[in-house]
Image (cartoon, rainbow, N blue to C red; front, side, top):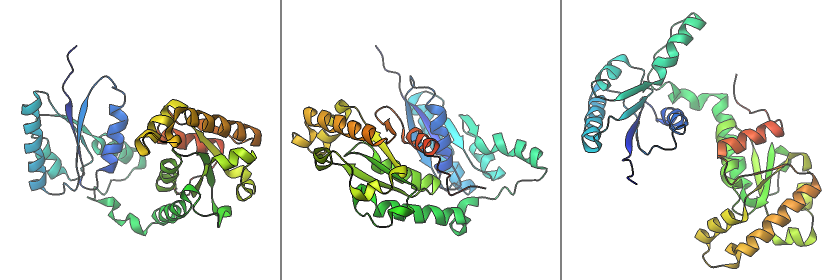
Length: 277
């Protein structure tokens, strides 16, 4: 069976490119049978930089013999005009949405390049930074101080996805997320640490299949008892039994994205993100 070559996808922005990449990933995920080579091109804020993008897009087309895809969040019309000289499928996210918004709101967009550059002065940004600092200080059970300030405390065995989920909640929603690893000592005494029991309503569990956990741990500590399939199975079963007994809701992280896990946590614990209107 022949493997289809990867199609080049360019995420082009006058800023960091994160918005273009995030929205682009959501679109590309709908085509799991296709292969993509993704290239981020941030800070394209002049015509010269746009011309360099055009050159790279044309080279990619010649190299792969396929028309590239361009996901763009450029706002300067002159820069956009230069970029469109390349032969590519253009998905202009601002063009798609700014027009309808202008009609609905009855006002013109500023079309300001790098509008997010001033975000550091916003309350939303400050809330995110505060949440990130809190989450880092309370990662992996490092500290039990000020747990009353947490919005959620994630529990689960080591390498079940607690840290990346905690950081995503902090960075995206300014949620103060602590996390605590359930360890063999917790299973032996068959109860949660006292410091966590005081905050039972904030607890949410992550679990994972023993097979996947063993794979992850094997990469971290090859051929160790920590990574042994039978130990992973014991820890997962013990953790789930403990969470069920304590009435802690939990979700399996094996096949779910961080975004999906986070949305589930926000919904079930009814956390209101500390950012927004």
